[in-house]
Image (cartoon, rainbow, N blue to C red):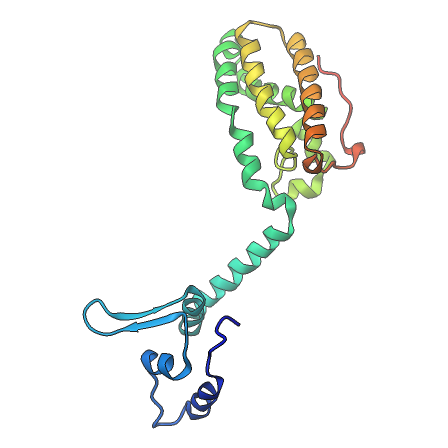
Length: 229
């Protein structure tokens, strides 16, 4: 495929002689006889045989069944990822999901938790604020999304994993904005109104600017319309 000057006749000779007691092959002999490329053999100090990674993979597969199995498994994983747009964008989405996450959780810790007396309420404070953002953007909580999308949930995916890049950009903005609203001691209902309005405006603009990367929407019936109080 990659060597137009390869001597196929010499290769056929080696192929017929292989297995005979008199047959002997060295990298240097192979290179000189067939005009092989992708492999270099050096004698003397610091010498050795060096090969292109394609050849190295083939050699490794020949001497180690375990290595060959790893190679096959990794190839299949990469092809599955390549053929699945959701998996292909997974890492990018994870990074976007975490952009302002710490800012948001720190604000919850500093401005909501201290006002709570009941320990159980403190445990749910972070999830409650996260779900408020989910509803502002997607109009459903994380739990409602899992119930509406059981197949995705079985694969370990959540509402943020299946979101578009545009939505995750807006979500990062919501986390930062909500942290600022918490600092201003604004009540939850007012914060939700501001966040929902911001989410809808930003998402509309981003989708219009970058329509080809817009959210591949799940069935609209999967998203319940909610009013957050």
